[in-house]
Length: 203
Image 1: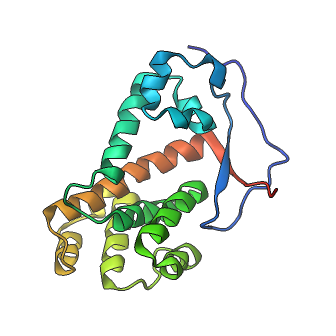
Image 2 (image 1 turned 90 degrees about the horizontal axis):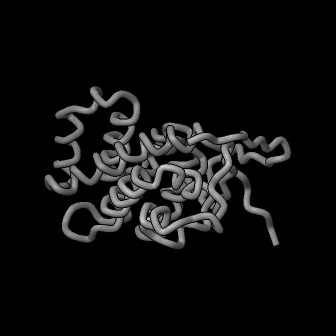
Image 3 (image 1 turned 45 degrees about the vertical axis):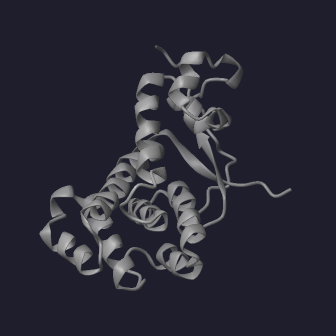
């Protein structure tokens, strides 16, 4: 597989602050044109609506890897069986994204965390003040665990698990914190290396 050209976006208005607003994403490598997607590509996308996203059409250049990535993503965040409430799964991903400096990913998961928790002001505090923001002890524990995993995974340890247990998280909920942070610790780096966020144009 060869990719013939790279894309540059000198006129992009790159957002400079973390936000819950919806952003666009501009790739530095050419995504597959939507008209060229085959059944194999759609199988990798899993969700056909993702064909509208330049990010997923770029990843669709390797549809088998994309399929594994997408199924993992969906199981971490959409599986309702036991574990952590959806809002706090999103919080874990938002905290990792805030720590890693991925403005686009942080906007997506902060928006979901706000929607499912109805704690928009607390989520915005995380974006504005960073991962040291005071969010209440349960959320503080989730953020601390997510940051430890994002910084250097070996810094995550028994003290983080104990702090989460103290806040009422059982084994499955703790695993969900780990999944959310670990997945987005990887996903942030992939997105940051392939393109840049863009402020959504106003109608």
